[in-house]
Amino acid sequence: MKDLQQIVIQNLLKTKESSRIFHGRGRLWAGFEHVVIDYFSPHLLITIYKEKESEAEFIKELVQSLKEIPDLVIENILLQKRYLSRPELIAVEGSIPTIAEALERGSKFNLKFGDTQNIGFFLDMSPGREMLERISQNKKVLNLFSYTCSLSVAALKGEASGVVNIDMSKAALSVGESNHLLNKLDMNKVRFLPYDIMKSWNKIFKFGPYDIVVIDPPTNQGDSFKVERDYYKIVKRLNEMTNNEAVIMACLNSPHLTSQFLIDLFKEHAPEFKFEEIIYSAFNSMETNPEEGLKIVVFKKLTCQE
Image (tube, rainbow, N blue to C red):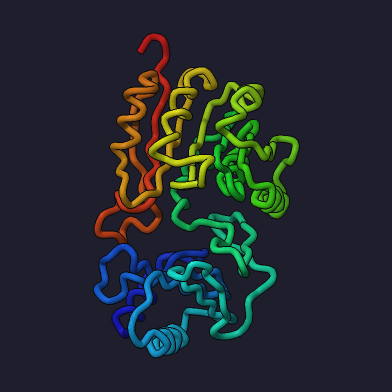
């Protein structure tokens, strides 16, 4: 446990913002592969992905070791056992906060700790938000599978001319809207549309053409979207909905599919787009194989001359 404690201390030194301070799922630390610890000061979230023997004693020791770290200001220590069919969030210390925020590069994002598996904000997407904030000036952005719209916040912070957020979940879009209000962004420049993407192309095209398209789907969204079955259907639509030199941020968060899966899809279904780079998860330095985590594969549309 002392080794884990030292890793957390080192990670705390790197940032004063919300961050993952231990990423056992990256498989760099034997014996802790099932443990993830996220810090949203002053709230600490421990997620356990696999049941182990003597779990109660392990959690007790883990919590005590974290409480001993001087720079870790903690009001609440929360625990989620992700291996359960219905993961329940419990307060190991303190209580479950009704109001909480993540902080990243000056932006704030609402968090929902409670009865849902996800808290409304994904730390691994930090490099994607950083990129969008950097490249979005005067650009029209389409954010597909927008969830709570953190990428839209980043684009508008980067002075995008407009952002269209598409997600089936009205509840997620409502949180997304509150995230924009929280950051005092111009609401006249943003739309929140509760569409089934695969059935709404005409509506989506209506607000284009776009200069940047973000595709960030869940690996499996039931019958409505499956990455291996449906991703190409989006890729083959990109040419008709984008301007010249448009940038595509194609995201993939499956441990079983690599970046090459997307590169091959674009070669076959959108050859007008040139592969530019791969951006890995914010946790990639804590992973034995970054390809098993989030991948953002960036493409750029070729001009007629190219």
